[in-house]
Image (tube, rainbow over all chains, first blue to last red; front, side, top):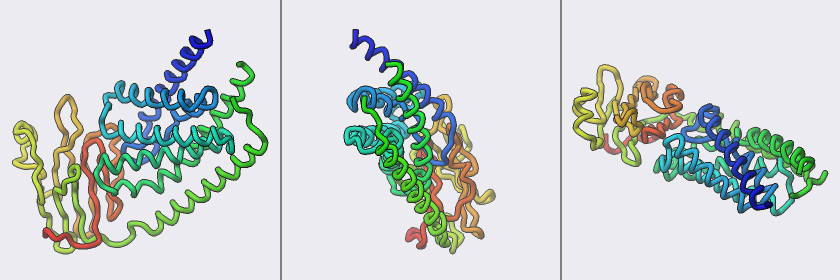
Length: 165
Length: 160
């Protein structure tokens, strides 16, 4: 019963993350080619807090693969940038949740910063030049308010979750 | 599931304020100092390969390398080679990687010797980020879906 409940919930979280990712991709908020601010990381953070890092990284990878398949960008340049950003941010968020030093807000801000670093690092390989580093300062600057926003949403979600479950 | 403590709340606040000030500071310093100097030349790349160099001092455009493209594109777009240097329009036409119904699309880069600037004036991509960048005198212009980018150099190019 518990296993079925977990699979159902994770499937729902994955569906929400995919929708968030698609919405984010259709709104070019930042003037950086191929890069996204990572609003879909809200679900990754929530999953890490509710379950563990293992479930968080599995859902994140599935999300990137499914969104790229749905948008026809699988194995394209933006796919590698998204995958790299998501992997790095999820690993960092997993570490900081485990350390239990910061709350969801702090962990989200850290995750957001590493999401940008991961994307730019992959961008260097995709473009084949360090020219993409020129975008790093603007991305890092924008990642802080994004991380705060996703952190606030995740925090609110988790407090409601605690009262329900 | 972990429960949050008031101490974590305090740490979170300190962290986000520190990050905001730090990243904001880095960004401001970067905006005020980076890409301020005059560029001597600019290069247009397709992937990792340099295709064209534009020397602002000598007012010279040099096709360094040619794109290997399928024959159908010469007839389709009416150019005899890619990159194509359009002297009248002060522009360079390249074939990007972005496809519409299986057909690769053009990327048009204009240059201005007087302003020592480059601009991507026409391209097709999902968000048109590189053409929205407008005219640049130092900041790189990247068309990721088309696999084309423009970078500026402070020194004159050896090929010219």
